[in-house]
Amino acid sequence: KHGVLTRKSHADMDGKRTPRGRRGWKKFYAVLKGMILYLQKDEYKPDKDLSEVDLKNAVRVHHALATRACDYSKKPNVLKLKTSDWRVFLFQAPSEEEMMSWIFRINLV
Ligand code: I3P
Image (cartoon, rainbow, N blue to C red; front, top):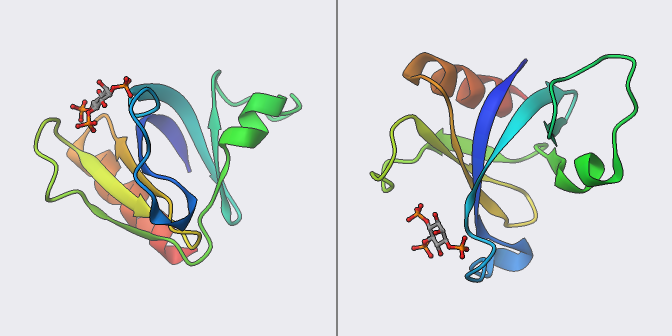
């Protein structure tokens, strides 16, 4: 699965709140492949190698939990992703349908 997702980092590894200055929203082209959600600057090209930054932004979604971000009301179509290393991200999808589809696919991993 792939598509545009806008990310906000809410908690870092070990569950510590992401500090000010690193809590902004950032738009990515997201690709869910195997157990990894790749967050790329540019649209996915199958034969192009991932950049160092792309690799750094990739999130392991094995044993992660995706839910609708019910407690976040500033933007619509936002899902919350809790990873197995206690990071928390918010991702805004372009539509309700896309948000539900990402939640479903991430939780299948
Ligand atoms: C954050 C940025 C986010 C905002 C966040 C700020 O600043 O303005 O958009 O979240 O508020 O800290 P920075 O880019 O300097 O990290 P919202 O869009 O959800 O308001 P927060 O600290 O209350 O999460």
